[in-house]
Image 1 (tube, rainbow, N blue to C red):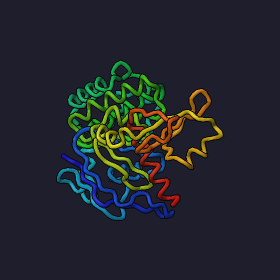
Image 2 (image 1 turned 90 degrees about the vertical axis):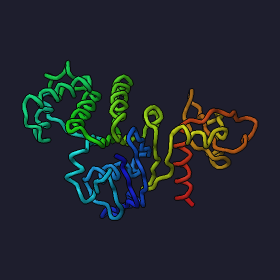
Image 3 (image 1 turned 135 degrees about the vertical axis):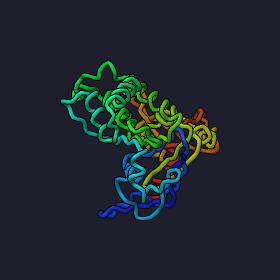
Image 4 (image 1 turned 90 degrees about the horizontal axis):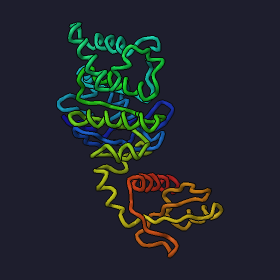
Length: 295
């Protein structure tokens, strides 16, 4: 059951053109949607999740017309937004049971077994009696996935799921997503490149409402292999390097800027060639967008 998105556009009343003719084919498995804050990721996720209408375009999930058969979509959709509320004085077990009732699971025994299985799957069973207000950020995210899995969804959307999680919780959450993605379409919307590199077999980079690149992460890296050059420079020289070279990223190491430059040939003898990674792909595409806007 693939998700097909064609010519999807959305402009908000304030004039923000959030989506500009988006075309994507998303198969079963983990699909990474990379982009900076404000790129249009959440607008796309909300539209797929039937929470807002686009101006133009179509979305189909298998045989379901997402924009016209909203009830059918919601029956097979699990959605974990960037921010979601929980009842702080209710236990995980009780709230999952309540959500299962709302999802139409009326048989008490069936519901009890489902809740138990989901709590085990998300590694929360030992905390099932604990009120959600006492959960850590990572535990709340895993609880959110447990909620999303109640209806055995065919499509799961997670929006910035690992932002703010410590490394251990992030690993637990990503392992859980990876397991789910074996038989389900899972869209991972994030600005964290490592999440996509570690999990996804397909991806797209989006910025300013447009898809800049789509494909397999490893294949996209091959497209710039041998074209990434590194150099540590003085702070006051940064603007000069940005003027003279295609500086796609910079970071401070021991107080000095460490720059990555995209170039078919060695810029000069002071640069060293380094293996390309997905972060270089990401920054090179975002850099292209910025240059187009400035031009």
